[in-house]
Figure 1: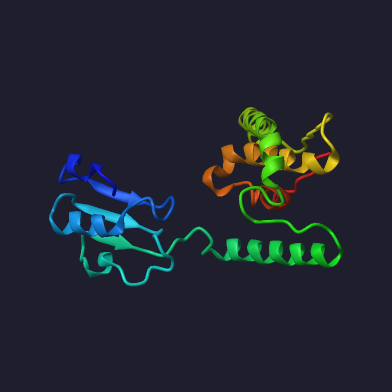
Figure 2: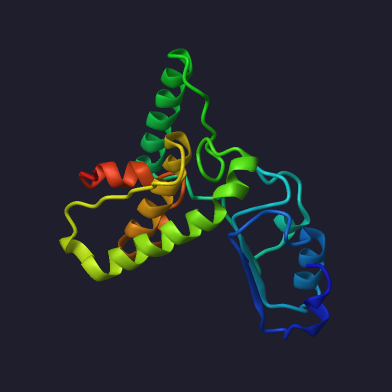
Length: 187
């Protein structure tokens, strides 16, 4: 914690399941030991996996767990399938994709497509809310972009479309997989 610990109530509890490093773990341990805050729960750390840390010496004031985002059997299967497909693509001479943020999206292309990505996700979300479970088929047309540039926009639309039903379970990496598992029959 950078500075706000002095302003927190001693009954406050801190939960970090977002990103490691946004909480100064040494300061957090000190604040917990001194009773400046009541408790903390973390599943992300400055260094992962969590090694030697002053947080480990604390008792009931802190809950430390491994990050569980990809710990489910379903997530492991999806990751294995995606990795195998990416290896296949590279061996076939296709461009390598990245599993960070939007798969295969170069930073220069991300900047160019950002407004389209936001719009596609918002429109997909709106359609997902309006159609609910009754949606059986959908279409996404990107007329002003080259074909290889439109795939991230389709992924953004899929993410938006599935978000009302799947909420935090759908992201730019797994949106295509989630859509296929639900019988995606888009044009």
